[in-house]
Length: 258
Image (cartoon, rainbow, N blue to C red; front, side, top):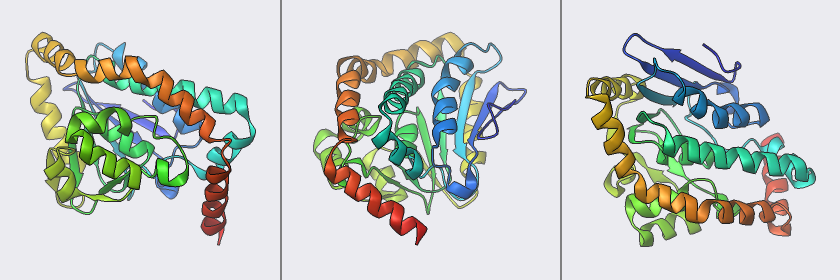
């Protein structure tokens, strides 16, 4: 099954859905099409009786480089597009947190911005040794609205989350494991196979016990989402009009072309 060429879905006989971000030439950065399908796929997976766990990964050398620069530039000019992307972001966060089956992130390379959020919203995280996390929203001039600000304080503590969200540095696989952002570190090329092994162990558990325990464990996250998500996405929406963001984005686009 394919949700468009940019997102691939394969469900095996054990009920494990391998969901692959598939823009490898762009390091799986989310353009308008990919952002739309990765936001919608969670409700589709939730409705499938044959899916009992999800392994999420990226094609090629990266998990995801985050937001696609041309899309971000268009969002500075097109308020309707901006509103739609933010609505999709809310659906993505709620869809992942509320999925009735567990999600294993197989982080095969850099996970930046949105990529970082996708991993942090997953239940278990496997990182290849050379992979890293980074959420540069604030350093770019955007409010960190779609994942890290909700999940990182729960995963690694408020004080540490403030450091990495406000300053936007890279978190190595070893640091991620020490901070509670990753469950396993594996060698290059092994993230998906290890992720599938964990997913296989999950699908062998009694499904009702697994689903309800996951739901209870996610209650603090669900409460944060319902109390803060709409407000923080509204704040991020305003960031697109800020001169600092527009200048930083223009500089990034110029460097990428140059």
